[in-house]
Length: 466
Ligand code: SAM
Ligand code: SF4
Image (tube, rainbow, N blue to C red; front, side, top):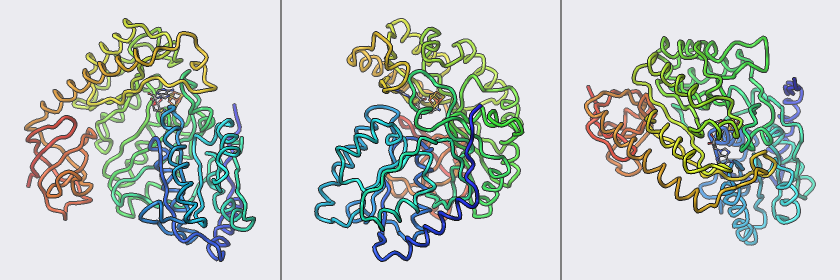
């Protein structure tokens, strides 16, 4: 077992004192802008960073070029995520020449890699502040150091296995909220950098999670998404903790109207969780269940710890227990050594499962992972051609599924006005599909029933039911 570093209330109090000192510092930045890359975990971390900055009296800027502090909350899951972040940081260098008081910060997964921290030190002297994933809670201390010492502060702790409770959060939405239940990952899929930059799996205590959910309900939140790299192994790092199914049950008792969760690992999808989903109407009938590949040899090389047959059995059991459940997935194409036949196994699995939608990725070698050192890395042209074919199959299936929903009624949590057509409202169905419909702006933030009248390539259209 490994040690989990639960940050003590005293350590957090120290940070609050630093936050107060920043607040009254004569050189305090007045405004901030956060650029977020990557997954929902990062999006939620950015809400925490925003919460901490606002506690220090620093307010949101409309535009990053006008902000006094620009934080880049980075991702390194694939090479292009890294390239994008570095490109944007470099772009700001020019703006900083005109506004030298601007502070540039970098945090998150990318910077947690040693080689990236070294690169930043050497090649990005205009970056004022950088910190890793495990020490985000120390932002007030680091910012105070930048202001007092008038020099850059780069603090990438090796200790990533921290859990900090009670940090301030500035929620993006008043009706929907992310709630992290576990950090890190123990699975070491051979292609994946996450365990190296997010640390070992550590579950928050269920009492803390339920307390946070109760606070969200009291503030008017209608839908909570429980977050973790592998939510369904929740509690396995702590023998005193309840299972993920029990946790879902407890959160559902807080008065929340809808619960979602992501992401789940197929090897940890228990019968207990399926039963809870079948019996608990608060849990949305949607399951994001990344399969990555439909071929057993590739799954083995990926260290996914399940076989195609097991995955399909879980899907069948889920569908039987929760009729009408929507399934979505993640797929990787072009893993080292993937043959055309092996790729076609992924296509046939997609045809068999018929996902509502899928995130499709070309395999990207990540330094330090096992797969990056595997021989027979694929020609990028072959991987590109395969992903195009896979996307075409999934798009056809998505189109067919959405078209088949015509005439049904969806319970939609209305999020706002549609970006494409301002006369329409938009929200998500139970199955997490975007629905646009004619409605009254007073419905924003509420659940409404929408009769589906048509479908686009990945959205539904409808009319509000009285
Ligand atoms: N923990 C989650 C899981 O296991 O599904 C999410 C991990 S990751 C943030 C999201 C997705 O990125 C993975 O499911 C996988 O499909 C993809 N991914 C991870 N590493 C990758 C790599 N090296 N190249 C391409 N895609 C990758
Ligand atoms: Fe990465 Fe696998 Fe962990 Fe997901 S389960 S975060 S893909 S190592």
